[in-house]
Image (cartoon, rainbow, N blue to C red; front, side, top):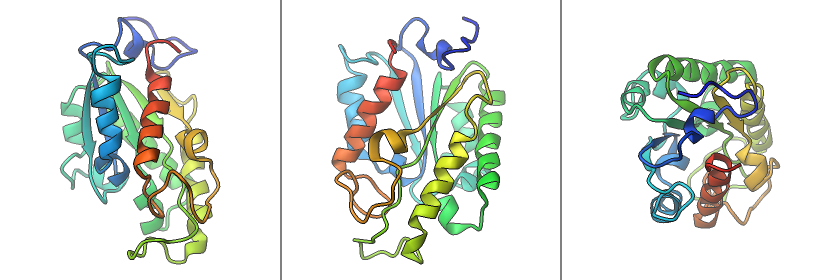
Length: 222
């Protein structure tokens, strides 16, 4: 097994190519109920000739879940099942439900993410981990369902999630923090966004954009 490369936390994942390796996606509804994201991986990126040809992608997201629920194993795909998957790469993205349901500080949420990382690293020591910042929350609700009260909290929650993840950069040698929020959507809570279906969830175009951007990050060639 190659040693960690100080310039690339995903050295072990990239070694010898993706064929036969498993990627395990962990998260809330933006992972669990993202059909275009997973279809893009399955039929394009992991298919023969794709950048991740031969890799196996697992959807271990849980609709409506929080990182706290993941860590306490109260949902279908909790920490125990994630470890049991024995994946070569874990992609974790929680936060949208945590920060709007609990009075968490940025530091508290950051340490919750850190706990998930520590437990994954202990349970699957051969794996690499990518922490993906969630998409921003929109400042205006276009759905019948009330996601935020008040709506003015959208930017504060968005900043809190991003700051929590970015504060973990460089903390472990085999963990990459990827700022998907800024790269794909931008970090501003806008009233509407061409890649968002509602206040919390990407639309089909947003899911595809996320998949394509992620492959550029985890592909065998940087």
